[in-house]
Length: 232
Image (cartoon, rainbow, N blue to C red; front, side, top):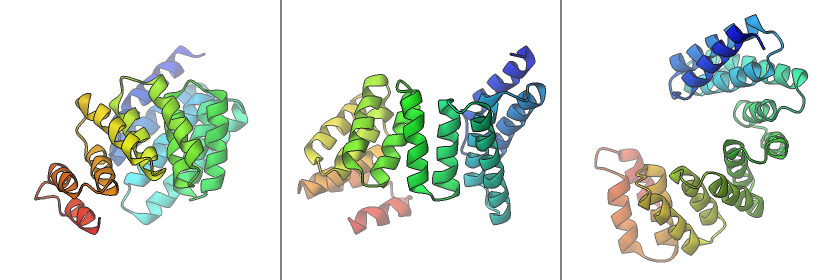
């Protein structure tokens, strides 16, 4: 592998860890483009470029720009698969394109399942698979993937948060609370976690605790979450 191409790829990968901003996403795309320019057959660079483009599209405000970025992301993911049909990252990238860009959830699930089969020890891929299986109401498959994520990444409280949500949607409220409390004990404090705790308390008919979680999860300035809890 071209050392300069590898260096550019690793820089792009590092940049992409700090997303949630279109400019940052596009900076990662530039690094991946550099890697591809130096090594046109660098399948992993194409796969990561596809992911960065989809994330950039999510962050873009202009509809035209969003569509363009999604199309570029699809091209990059498909090129990665052409170069390396058995590359898990290429299938996960195309899964992301289908899920977010095309709203083709069945097609996305097929790609995520293939990625998971190729990389059964990749917690990130399995976490995405669990989320999509849950979205498709494939509860047992979602729970199986989510439990495997916790096994693979036991020190990451976000793994337990994902499992807690899948347990909640599977109507296993008591276990959802237990797992969510485990995540809280690991010093995780996010709105997503507080929400699953509150929703589970409500499901087991403990409105007082639900209200307490509402206060914790939705500070007075956060009208969006206040409205969410009021609908519960």
